[in-house]
Length: 365
Ligand code: F6P
Image: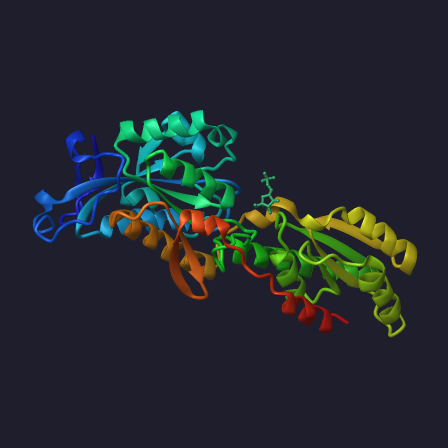
């Protein structure tokens, strides 16, 4: 079966013979002598999957894995896409990905590999089945693009003998070890544009529009989109709000100065926006409407930031697996790409920018 592009002439190369493919371990760094001629190069097989909620930029990360693998000079790397996250590993759904498999995918939202939240992978039987399928296919390492639940799966699979490298991919930006997660920027920009639209109608009707944004248990999207859209208030799960003091008293105060429309951005982790809406209407006399932005925030073409971060992190994941470093998570520390041992990564916490909440409040009236 022909599926891999030869670097020299860009023609498909023969699939590696089974004996060239290896054991449960990622290939050790290739010695200089071995790298001298293409014939003597080692071949390793990397699988890549996307897991959990899709996020814009996941395709860019997969593309970076495929292209970076192809660019390796020291080792032949064969990449396999796994269908629907860990479900595909359990069902043994590996598809060889040559260079052209990722053509025209950089700019597309969603995940072309498809994704799932896989309950079966939370069981030892599920992990064992997935590991057995990887052994049978000769897979030496797996790149897992997803959130912290997906990284726990990657840790379990690593412990079962298949070294994994995680890449943070979630719109929520809620991964403790990474300052940034793939999809976050695009989701915020989508939410900001939607809130801009809400402002038009809020202003036209002198209303208070309360808008719920995603983020699971985190308020990063809410805080930043509130600032970016000039919202009157941002409610986030990281800081409990007093609705009377933080919203109602302030609305009543500024209504006296002539302000007639209000945008309140609420993170989904805060709770029921209908109840907040009811209280505002009752205690301020201002007509209210609620909007849940929902899954619209997950789609769309990834932003520059998401495409670049996804590409950087996909490239690092291949570097790690090719140098024998499985059981790690790639992360962003500021603008730099870093990586951590996977258990350490899962323990890490990052600080919520409470100072930005104060900024949001100070510029909101
Ligand atoms: O983690 C990403 C996210 O979009 C969260 O913001 C949200 O809470 C959740 O996924 C929604 O999940 P689902 O797609 O299963 O409805």
